[in-house]
Amino acid sequence: MSLHPTSPQERLEVLDQIRGFALLGILLANMAFFASPVVYIQMAGIDGWESLGDKWALWGIQFFAEAKFFTMFSFLFGLGFVLFMERAEAKGYSVLPLFTRRLVVLFMIGMIHAFFIWAGDILMLYAVLGFILLFFRRSSPKTLLAWAVGLWAVPVVVVTLLLAPGFGGEFSDPQWEQSAYHYIERSIAAYGSGTFLEITAQRMFDYLFMAINSIFVAPLVVAMFLTGLYVGKRRLYQQLHQHETLFRRIRLLSLCIGVPAALLQVYSHQQMLHTGLTLYQWLHFVSVCVAGPGLCFFYITSLLQLYRHQGWQRRLAYLAPVGRMALTNYLLQSIVCTLLFYNYGLGLYNQVAPVWWGIIAAVLYPLQVCFSHIWLGHFRYGPAEWLWRSLTYWSWQPLKK
Image (tube, rainbow, N blue to C red; front, top):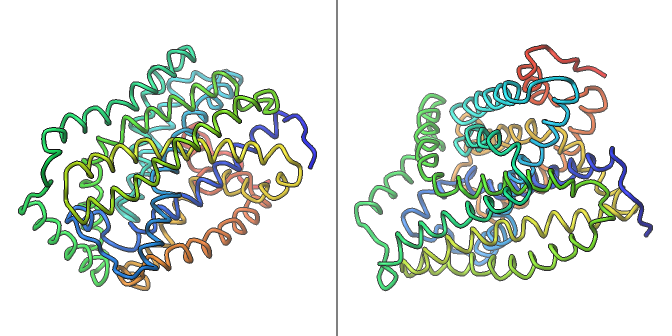
């Protein structure tokens, strides 16, 4: 296999490929939330699946996907901000009003997604937190890295301070658990047999519940934003062959950190459910905060290494159109999966075991690859990207090639 330097066009191609790969991970990680009231099941402290096959499927998703891909998208969002600034300034646009409008439009798309399609939306959170990038757009790479590390540490320190006094006992509240069981029954009734209006009401409730809890995730998201901004400022995505040693070191370090942390993530989650001990709740939270970025960077640097080989370039090229239509494909995943699981579709909510979730993802994702290739063979942008771009620039963009 031969290696060669990366051209300016190729450096954007590899970012699209990473984004396309991230969509596969996002789909896999989100399957539990599409198919079941997993948030409330965990809140109740119960193990919802008994068969060994289902347990292994869950453990696999937790190890390889959970928290590894929203961190990857957060990183790419920050890196994308650098590219957005460069293009806007090259065309004579002012970055501040243009990026503000871009985030407002993203928030509106996210609101429609969260309230009318699926409650697990991440777009509104990205839109709100994205404004923080504007305050760091002139910051030096050193400053960005320091803030990223500090923000990553914030939720770890806060949760440690909150839970440390109870390390010796159980984290249990009968009223909390009773509420969780009520929410489980309410979700199954709404999504499994409710009308569209009842499902919409449940969706809004679920989104608001998860939005409140996202306060613990927000610092990690911003930390990954700033890490992406750091990489963009240092131009590490350009001339990949010149940074091979750095990427190799990051890959080895992230593997050595990410794998043990991901194993601890799976183990502590099981112990948390079975024992209810506060110590395991803390271990689970901390391991997620470490394993997420750890394996995220391992995946990214591994893809960058593979991309430098011409044989792998041809294989990875299939992912690029999916990444170019990331917003469209993210929304499509929600549309297809809610049609599969909700009552206004096939109504399979809480009826499909975890062992099938990976199979569903393995069928849906190749269909998205085919769709993306066909669509971009005729059009410049995905439909959601075209709308986002048009409203950002306040001018209808040419869609057909």
